[in-house]
Each structure stands twice: as C-alpha cells, then as structure tokens.
Length: 292
Image (cartoon, rainbow, N blue to C red):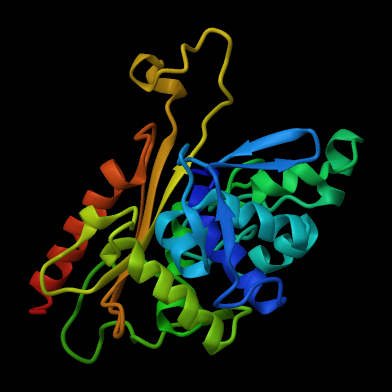
C-alpha cells in the first residue's frame, strides 16, 4: 500500500523507452562530468566527480543520472509516462488485497489539471531518474523486474497462503496482465546493464553478489524531501525522517530466473547499503530451500 518515488529503479523504464524510440542504442555514449546543464539550471549526478563516458549498459550499472537526464529530455514527460504505464506503473497490480495503491505516473495534463501550471521541461529530467512526482509501490517494481527477467510478460501477483498436496498448488503459469513495450533486443541490453549492477567493477550493488548464483538488479534512492534551510546538508546530521528511502530490485538467476525481489527500506538512504543486503538474503534463502 505504500507509495514511494521509485528512484533509480525507474531507470529501467527510461532505458526501455529510449531504446525503443531510437533516442539511444546499445553504443550511444554520453559524457558525465557529474552534472548536466539544462537551461539556467544545473542538474547534479549522484556521483559528484562524474562517471566519464557511459553507454546505456554502464549507465544502468553505475546509475549515471546524467545519461538518463538526456534520454528524458529527448523523450518528454508524456512519452515517458506512456512507457511507465505500459510497464505496470500508475495502476494496481491486481493482487487480492484490499485498497491496493496504484502509485502515480505524472503527465503534463495531470499537472495542469492539478495546479493550473504548465509542465516545465526541466521537471522531466527528475521524472527520468524516478524522482519528482513519480510514485510506485514495492509490488509494482517487483512485477516490473519479474517481467524484465522473464522476457517481457507482466503477471498478476498472487499471495500464496498454503501449499497443498501435489497437483493442487497454484499453477506457475499465472495470469498475464500485460507485456512490456520492449523488444528482445532491448531487454537483452537492459538485462546486461542490470547484471553489471551486481557483477561489474563499478556496479552499485556489488554487495548483493551471491557465490554460485547469478543475481541481477538495480539500486535506487528515493528522495523524501528537498533540502531544507534547517537541514545541515550533512547526511549524518539529518533528521531520520528527512533521510531518503533505499530501494533494491532484483531477480535470479540472470539467465534462468526463478525469483524476483523488490525491497524498500524507509529512510535507509542508499539501496546498496541497506536494501540490497536484504534482497541478497531473501534470494539466498529461496535457493537454499528450493535446493538450488
């Protein structure tokens, strides 16, 4: 039921949109100096020293904000929104649970209706990295990463209450609720980036590595509030309620996935430090119980 900005887990959607619309390809390279100038504003990358030259695989692996700012700028918020909705955001996932939240996929029309103010192009840059008015549930992100792993099929999630005798357990096929707006070529590129998140030398979730199990995933940091005057700006001094939420979404194994996991730690700050270790332990336990 909780709704949160999806943070950098949303970059999967931005990458899919950019690749499908021809804004980027596997080899499109962008230089990240640690910031991006757009109009009279400067949009910062989380890595102050920059990521240097990035293609989309490296940008996913190292979570380069500058790369995705530029995709968002070229696509526009409404085109991004179309892909986000097709990926399952902005609507209930359909689980049998009362009052399931649907999140929020912002559009230019939504802002105009809500505030009477036109959408500003700079706002799209924030949306492209999963910030701004974006809201998603942990379940929606789990369903999204499951679809990325299985080749593009979105399944209705179920709650398994009991496992009965053989032949009466729920079917593994599930109910199809949609298909990702992505070709096999696009998904192969995205999956390569998500694999590098964990296995790459510059990946943001190397802590999620599991010996003998190929895990792929994406970290995320979900901003709670803009920096206030009474906030010192130093993370260790910030009030707990001002600290960002931490995301990690993953699947395993990379080439033959059996489990998808999404974890959010409220006010956990960084997905790599708090959420990824939780997902790692869940995944380890699953494969241990399943006999690997």
